[in-house]
Image (cartoon, rainbow, N blue to C red):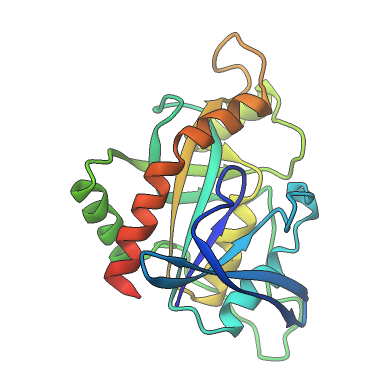
Amino acid sequence: MLGVIGGTGFYRLGRKVDERDIVTKYGIANIKVVSVAGRKIAFIPRHGRNHTLAPHMINYRANIAALEKIGITGVLSFYTAGIISKYTPGDLVLVDDFIGLLTPATFYDDFKGGMKHVDFSEPFSKDMKKILNEVAAVNKIKLKKKGIIAGTRGPRFETKSEVKMLKKMGANLVNMTAGYEMALLGESEIDFASLVVASNYAAGVVKKPLSAENSLEVAEQSKGKILALIQGFAKEVV
């Protein structure tokens, strides 16, 4: 079964057929099993059932551990993100790399199983990215490439100086949840791929105040494309 993690704007993916509270050593995670194009998908609403969890409050470890526990075959994660460079609002971006220095997350709090250092030189599944590109082409959906997303803690937006720093580090997108999830997915060695809706310009990129409402509006406009990509992907791998 495919796993999907979504947040702002990505709550109604398909017909719900089951809902489970999965108990893990890190806490309880809520998983909705939904039917998309006749396939069952395990969906985690990262901000909780009623979108009440701010980015810094999410139990990322429980969410990823729960997906691993139920035996999913791979994970697609979706995000809205601020634009540092390269993209414009409304772009759908396939992520190639991430910067998680500001969002430390790990499953390895002890050394009961020995010291472990996971290779993150290629964190995303090449096969899953290939399928996403093929599905996008079939559906005439333009996917922008070479997304490098930086994670910040939130829930506040970044300062202009922070955005400048992230740009110098190589990031062209910024988001408050991706860094945590991508680090944990990589440690769990679950195959995963990530797509971003570039929803707004980050602080200082344009002379315009930031608005969470604008991000929601752009995410809402992208829902049809996101659903088409999930449907097409599910048909290929589930």
